[in-house]
Image (cartoon, rainbow, N blue to C red):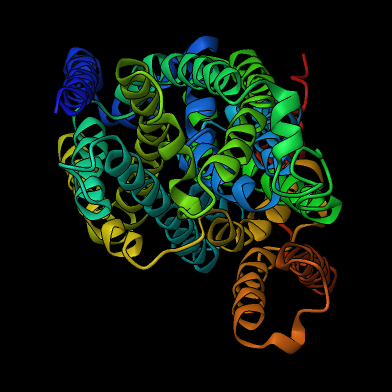
Length: 480
C-alpha cells in the first residue's frame, strides 16, 4: 500500500506541475490565434529542441522500442535513432525554407501553389495520420499508468486519465504550453530512463551477465535483430515524415527566425540518437527477467522492480514522453481543422476570437475522437510505420515545390496524394502487390512517377513568389 501511495503522489504532483505550467503561459497564448498555434513565431533554439525531442521521443520511442526489443533485441533502438536522423535532415534541408514561407499549415502551401482539391486531400491525410500517432500515445500512456499503479489503473482507465491530461494542457496554453511543458518533460524523461538503465543493468549483474543470459544470439546485436532492411526502412520513413508532417512543420514555423529553426532541429536530432538504444537494452533485460509477460508491458514492469520512489519518477518520466508527443500532435491536428477547414469552408470571415475558440473546441473533440482509435490498436511501431507512409506524397510535393518549382504542374499535387492513398489501401488489402520490403518504397516510386508524369504532361506550372518577382516587367527609366 505504501508503494502505491508513493507512486500516486508522484504522478499527481507531476500532473499538477504540468497544469501549473500551462496556466502560467496561458496569458501569452491568449493574445491571438497565432500565439496559440505557433507561439507567436517566437520559439527560441532550446524550445525548438525540446519540442522536436518531445514530439519524437514518445510512447513509440520508449514503450514501443522496449516492446520490440523484448522480441528481437537491441537493434530495435534504431527506430528512435531514425527519428533523430530525420530531424537532422530536416534541420539541414527544408527547415529554413519552411520558416521563410511564413505559412501556418501544409495544406496552406498546397492551396497557395497548387489547387483546392490538393488542399482538401492534404487536410484529410494529415489529420488522419496525426490522429493515428496520437492514439498510440493513449495506448502507451495507459500501459504506463497501469504498470505504475495496478491497484488503481487498468490500461483503459490509464488511457482515459492520459486523455484528460493531453487534452487539458493543450486546451489551456496551445504551443506555448506544449513547448514550455517539454522543458520539464524532456529533462525528466532523459534523466529518468538513464538512471533506470544504470540501476537495472547493475541489478542484472552488468552487461556481461546480460549477454550470457540473453534470450537469443542477436539480443545485443545492433543490426541482426530487426535486420538492415528494416533499419533502412525506418530511416526512409522518418526522414520522409520529418520533412512533411504538420506537427513537425508547425514546430519549425514557430521559430523566431530561420537560424533558430535549423539549430533546434539539428541539436534535437543529435540528442535523440542514444535514447532508443537505452530503451531497447531495458527491453532485452525485461525479456530475460520476465519471459512470460506481454511485450507491451516489458519496460513498465521492469522499472517497477526498482525502489518505489525511483520507479515512480522514472515511469512518470516515460509518461512525460507521451504527454510531450501528444500535445504537439493534438494541437497540429486542431490547427489543420480550424485553419484549413473551418476558416476556408465554413466561416471565412470569422474574427480572431472566434478562430481561437474553434481551435480550442477542435482540440477537445479531436482528442476525444482518438480514444476510439486507441481502443482498436495493437503493435505500436508496426501500426505507426504503415500510417506514416502516407507522408511520402507530401515529401515529394514539398521537395519539388521548394527545389524545382519550374517542373511542378498545378494538378500534380492532387494526383500524387490520391496515388499515395491508393498504394496504401492496395498494400493493406491485396497481399499480391507486396513485392517490395515495405509500403514506403512503393509509395516513393509511385508518388515520384505520378508527380513527374503529371508535370511532364501538363503545361500549367505553379508560380512561386520568386518566379512572380522575376516575371514582373521592368519599369522604363524616366526620360528627361
